[in-house]
Length: 359
Image (cartoon, rainbow, N blue to C red):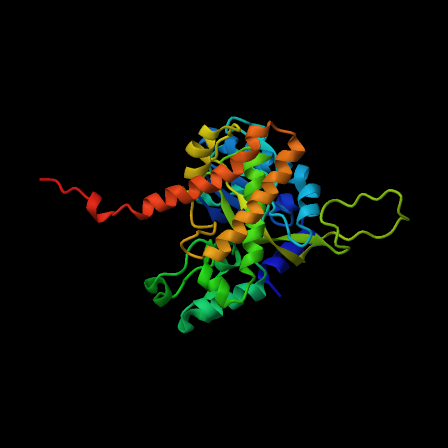
């Protein structure tokens, strides 16, 4: 049984969430993420009010876009899951005295007891323990396996899905030492016999929704594998069937979790317009400048084609539903063409030839 699941279940069953201290479960450029024990939520806290406000709003914009397109996308991709994005519920400024009580500050770890912008968000739960243990068994040094399984930080495992990169020889020779933000590269996914085509298609669906329904460029956005708590009756959200005969409804069950692809972190993203200029100046740089989540033609041509086909089809479905002008319907193809053009251009760029040494 997972220690995380047991801790969260005890908190949900026996303890009032407002009595439990928060624990750091993630650190990033935008802010720190804290577990709220016994709940499906987390707090994200950061120093830049502008970046935090942008992340809060664009995360919800993407969440809403997924809900708005879910039916049409699933009709056209009946055997594929659509990536999830958490929902943000409340935002508090550093000056909010009603939120930043002494008790609230006390519940934070000592190094984080300062007033900063903060928002509450659906938590992306970590990978279940059997999967974490399997990753440690395969990718960690044999001498470190047991210690890694006992390391509480490894309980907070989200997997970064890197379909656009294979391990270098050096990376293959170097054992991993943490499961936090674990980079699962394409060759590792193949070694684990996971369905790369499914992941590529689902990632393409998510990117199409980001671009053409949410209208964001997805700059520095992450695609990770995580899980979510389920209810005992497999109801994913709040129970709401008033026509049903009254019966027992169990609390959130943290010990039963489903694995999903999630999209998160929009503090560096920008809203776009449906123009060729924004495709070339925003979408393409955001795609090529991100970590290697997306398939790349030079890494795996077949997987790239799978990704492209799904992205273009999903984009067509979204744009048709929006009844956009005819010219806008060609933008997804332009995006793909420009990605390939710039990639080929970059292949011809010799880094060593560009180095200029000072006199």
